[in-house]
Image (cartoon, rainbow, N blue to C red; front, side, top):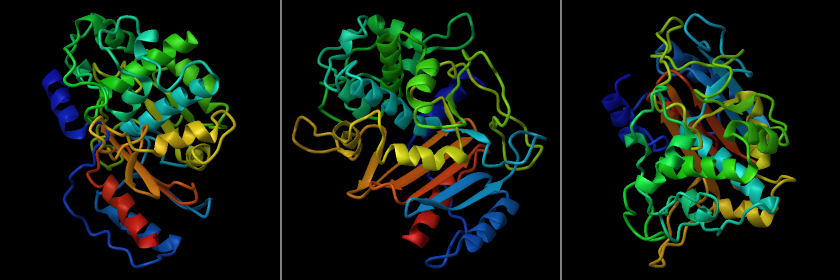
Amino acid sequence: MKRTTIVLMSTWLLFGCDLKAPKINISLKEAPAPAEIGVKLDSLHGAGEHAGAVVVMREGEVWGQWFHGVERSGGDRVSGASMFRLASVSKQFTVAGVLTAVGQGRLALDDDIRVWLLECPYEGVTVRHLMQHVSGIPDFYMDLPIPDRGFLGIADVVAALPDAPPMERAAGAAFEYSNTGYVLLAGLLERVYGRPFEELMMAEVFEPAGLECTRVWNLFSKDKDWLHKTWSMEGVDPNAPQIDPTELDGVAGDGGAFMCAQDAARWNAWWTSNAAVPDSIRLQAFQPAVLSDGSQSDYGFGWSLPDAHHVAHSGGWLGARTWWWRSLDGQDAVVVFNHTGSEYATEVGRAIRDALW
C-alpha cells in the first residue's frame, strides 16, 4: 500500500471515528430473541455486508454471540477463539496499562510526561492530557520518514519528539483526537516498566485479567502469525484477498491489540471492577475532560462518552472494523469484531443495541 493511501485512510478512519456507511436493512423488532438476531446476521453475511464476531451481554452474562466468515483467505471459519485486530478500540487497553501503573504507584495521572519522555519538548502535558486527547501535541507520527527497516516503531515516534512540530494549542485547551498521543503513552509505559509494550501489557494487564486470547501485535513481534489470528480481508468471500500490514504497523498504543470473542466478557468485567486498579482511579476513565475554558469534551480515557450511563469506541484500520458499547455498570454490552473492511460494523452494533435497550 502506498504511503499516500495510508495517510488518506488514516484521515478518514482516525482509527476510531464512526464510519459514515450507507444504510443497510438491519431493522430488528423490539426485544428480539438471540435466534432472530442470528437470522438477520446470516442474511447480512449472505449479502456480503457482514462477517466476523458479535457478542451481546445482558445483566452481566453473555446473552448471545454469532460468528460468520473465515479467519483468513481460504482459512478456518470464525469462532469464539478467532483473534481480531481492534484498531482504535486498542486505546482502552493502553489506558488499562496506564491505570495499572498508577494503581501500582509507578506514576500518577497528572505527572508531566517529560518525567518519563526526556526527549519531549512540549511543556505542561500530563499523562491525563494524552489519554483525553487534549494534549495540544500535533498528531504527527504518520508523517514521519520510514526507517530503513521498512516500518515505524514506538521508539521511532519517541525519538522524533525533539524535532516534532510545535504545539498547536496549550495543553487542556481543546479536544483533538490524536493517535500520536497514544503511541507516546505506549512509549511512556515502556520507560516506566523497562520492557517492550507488548511484553508489559501481557504481564501486567492481560494475564492478570484472565484474558486467554488477547495480545498486542505489531511488526516487531517475534511471531508474524499464530493460530486463530484473523487477517484483514477485502470482503466477506472465503477466498477474498488478504491485506498485508503497512509501514505504520510497527507502532502500537493507538492500535495493535488483538482479541477474541471469548475474552469480551472478561474484559468487560475488568472495566467494572478489578484487583489491579482501585475504583477511585478506574472511574476517572469515564469522566469527560474539563477544558481550560470550563467546557467539557465527550471523551474520557480511551472511551467516548455518548451519554451519562454508557461508553463506546469504534476503530478502523486495514480490514478491521470494531465497535464496543457498554453500560457503565458493566451489565450490558455490544461488541462487533470485523476484519473484512465492512462499512457496516458500527451500524450492526447500533441496530442490535437499539433493539434491545
